Length: 141
Image (tube, rainbow, N blue to C red; front, side, top):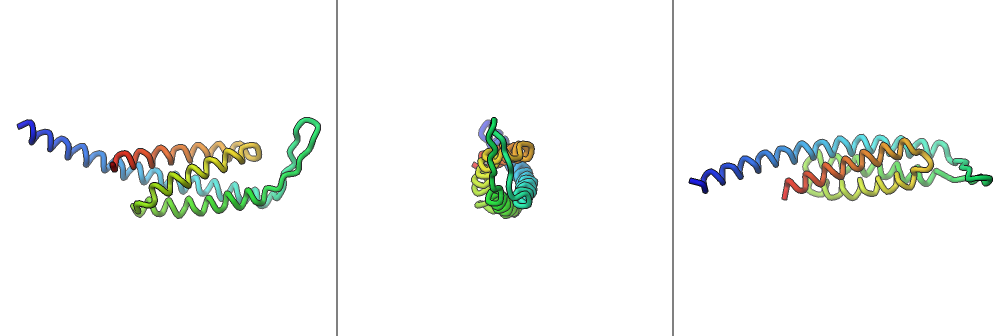
C-alpha cells in the first residue's frame, strides 16, 4: 500500500514541479525581454551621446561611449533571441539565457559609472533572470 501511495505522490509532485518550471521559464523570458529593452535603450543613448566628460578631482577625462553603446545594443538583440527560444521551450534557450544574462550583468557593472540607474536596473533584471532560469533547470532535473 505504501508503494502505490508513494508513486501517486511522486507523480503529483512532478506535475506541480513541471508546471512551476514552465511558469518560471515564462517569467525568465519576459524578464529577458524587459532587460533587452533596457539594454537597447541604454546602448542607443550611449551611441547618441557619443562621449562623456568625467571629472576626477582636478582632472577631466573624455570617454568615447559609442563602443559601449554598440555592445549594449548587441547584448539586447541576443537577449531577445534567447527570450524567444525560452518562450518556444527550446533546450538551448535556458543555458544560453544564463550565459547572456550573466554577460549583460557584467557589461552593466562596467557601465555603472556612466549610467548608474540604468545599470542597476539591468543588473537587477539580470539577477531575476538567472534565478528564474536556475529554478527552471533545477525543476527539470
